[in-house]
Each structure stands twice: as C-alpha cells, then as structure tokens.
Length: 154
Image (tube, rainbow, N blue to C red):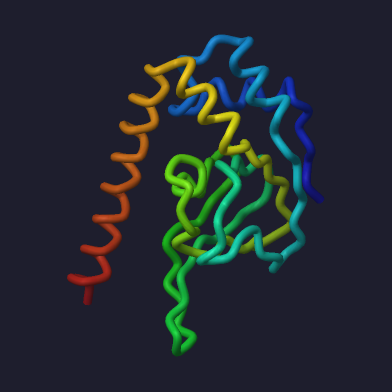
C-alpha cells in the first residue's frame, strides 16, 4: 500500500532536494500545490520510452526501475529508484521524449511536478537554473560510469 503525502509534506520533501534547496517557502508551496498525485500497482508503467513527459517525477513511496529495451526484447536497467528520488529530468527540463520506460516494482506513490510550473520558477529564480544544471551534470556522470561498467565489465 502506498502512502500519500499531503502538499505540506511534499513541500518539506522538495526543500531537501538538490534542485529546489534554494527556493523559499512560498515558491515551494506553489510547486507543491500544482503537483499531481498518482499511485501505481506492481508492474504498472509510469511512463513509456518515446512518450513526451509532462514534468519531473518525485517518488514518494515504493520502488521503480527505469529501463530500455532493444528491438529483440533485451532489457537494460538504467536505474532503480527508491522513495525520495526524482526522475525523468529530461521531460521536465528539456521537453523531449522519455529516453526509457519506468515501471513500478511494487505499489508506488508518485508526485508529478508539472513542467510549466518548474519553468515559471526558473524564470523567476534564475539561480534555480544553476542548481538544475549541476544536478543534471551529476546524473550524466552516473550514466557515463554505467556505460563504462557495461563496456569494460567481464
């Protein structure tokens, strides 16, 4: 069973994330109040590779996997996600198609932070853009390390 956070609880969670640490409480409140709550059953797809995402996801409860599949059906897991993590930054910040598919490994509760709400905050708080760039750079380094492990591993 998933646990639904109220928007006040979501605000507290968002305040601790690298992306949003610099935001003041009124800005965090605007972001949280526009968020959309969704629950997923085990095995249910959160989003599909190739679809355009409406924003940034915050996993409140449960576990997900993010994976890509080849035409031949082979799956490569890119990331396992646990409570308190954000995912699908591409959809939130670049308005591009999802590069992978996210699937619930157990019942999961997810907040969707709308792309337009985040874009408004970036326009109003330019220092937020710097935090987003830094956090995205960290994610790119993680993916480069994953590629190296897959390429150079036994």
